Length: 313
Image (cartoon, rainbow, N blue to C red):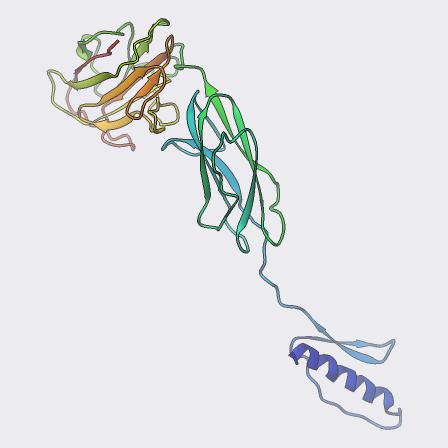
C-alpha cells in the first residue's frame, strides 16, 4: 500500500473518531500526511490530506527546427543555390520524452529517404537530389506525449539564375575585376594591378552555343612573386567566397579551397563527380584572395603576389 493511500485511511479514521466523540469529552489523535498538506473541512468536520502528485517530467518535443544546406555549405532555414543542387535537410529538436516522430510535407522529396523518427542528439537527415525549382519543405514534430508547438517548421531553397549573371556590384571598390578572358591560357594578374590585400574576380562568360562537355582545367600559380596561400572559389557571384553560392561538383561539394596553387575542374553542362557544371550562356566568377584561413588572415606580405593562370574554353 502506498504512503498516499495510507494517509487517506489515516485521515478517514481520525475523521470518524472526531465525529463519534461528544463535545463533553476531549479527544486526541495523532496522524501524519508526509506526501501533502492537511486541510480541515468545516462543513463536514473532517480532515483531508491533499497529496500533490510528483511531476512526471514528460515533455512534448521542444526546440525543433528543419534546415537546408548545399553540400558542405552553411545550413539555414532559407538558402539560395544553382538549379540542380543537392539539398540536405536536417530535422532536429533539443528535448523530448522518448523518440521524436517527424512528418515531412511541402515540396517533393524527390524520392529521398527521409527518416520519420529520431532521438534527440541524432538528427534526422536526408538529401533531395537535383532540385531545379524553388522549394519549401516542412516538418511536423510529435512524440507519445503530444505535438510540438508551432508545427510545422519549414526550410526554403531558392533557385539562383544560372551563373549569377550581371555586374560586379557586390565587389568592394578596390577589387581587381577582369573580363573577356574566356579561352585565354595566359592571364597575368600583374597586367591589371597588385592584389596584395584586394580581391581578384575574373568573369567567365560561357558562350550560349557552347557544347563541348569535355573536362576543363583552370590552374593558377605564382608568377614573378613569392608563393603564398590563397583562398579561391568558382562562384555564381562576384567577389563571393562562401560555399552557398559556389559552383558544385556532382557530389554536391563546393569548388573552393585554400591552396598555394588553386585549380578547378569544370565542364559545360551537368556537373560530374570531379567537375563543376557550367551552363551554356551562363556567367560565373573565379574569385581569389591572399588569405591563410577562413578568419581572413592576410598571407601576402609583399607588394604584388602576382599569379598567372588560364580560363579554358
